[in-house]
Image 1: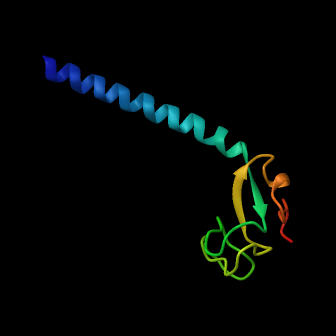
Image 2: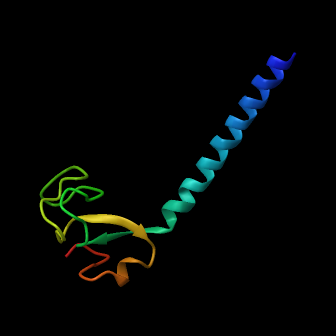
Length: 85
């Protein structure tokens, strides 16, 4: 009987954790924004005009490469823009 209670508790805990992660993911995404011109070479989050994959920017501060930052941070970073430069 103890094994079945443990299995049930584990299953319920897993479902709760799954539900919490799916609820918080969209909320976290809404609190982020693209910030262009501040990514280090090879550390961009998405495609650029000259490449099709994340992590392929060729120089620091590449104007068309972005990283996702918390909303409001991009305005405070030197050399940054919320649009491709």
